Length: 377
Image (cartoon, rainbow, N blue to C red; front, side, top):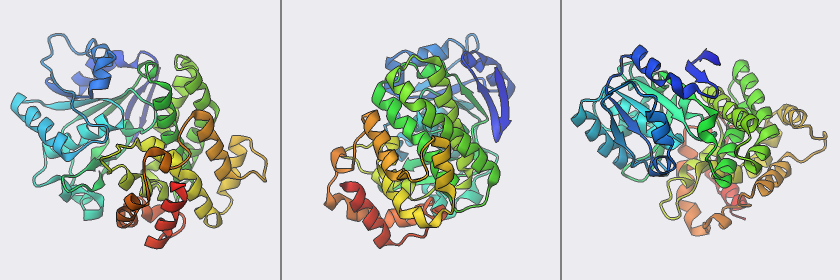
């Protein structure tokens, strides 16, 4: 079993969940709030995790995490946390549950409103080390939120915004690939392409961070080699291990910053009808953004082609689109239930999104309009 300390402490391997009680003891966490969703609970994963809590540990459970985490859900869970006298959080599930746990940990220890801590509101310096401790246990392989310094939330006013700080990173990440065996094919595909997009965007981003680039390219190579295998056979131990590693590496690396794929997927994810899966949105938006950025990335696309084993004359955008098709993902936003009228209100939010700043090529509102319309299909 590998114990890794990079940004935070990570327990990574089959059986890692068995270390939960020991990690709680090290943090002094005696009465946790478990933050999860009803799907994770229904398939028995919550019970599997709870088997490894300390004996007779008083525990509170919040299983009302929405598909995209909201300030409203955070408010309900925060009240439960305070009423029960909890002293830490354990996020169990995908990125939504882990991000919600981070938001609760922030607002349990910081004054004011959640919106005050959002990145585009200049909130990062306001986040202190007073954060309640969080243990993150992913049951999907995509967001990497277990090692991420940020969280994405839908505020009460409808905006989907992110807050971030090194203090937001969970104190411990417990990454047990066995917990991903029950993921259905389409969730495996969508979350896997989320990891792919994180690695790809980080590597191509405008910031200078060679260590992040190295981690991103390693994660990208793992995702390329194993995503189709994981979708085809969800019980394949090697594929699940490799995809969880790719997911974790994507979030380790994107401390460097992301780009226009996330600039688009964040406002798209704020739409309430239909509710859209973040990783699938990233997959669908990626080809158009690859084409847009092509003249601003230097030789990075050539590096990606080498990692993928593609010929030098390959069209990278078309290769990603073909991979999406092989995985059974939608070809465009229209297939996901969107139309032109739903796009226009999202453009200002895309321009203002914190990930836009590190896209390799600047974007105006008109540039984003073109990307959205191209991706609409």
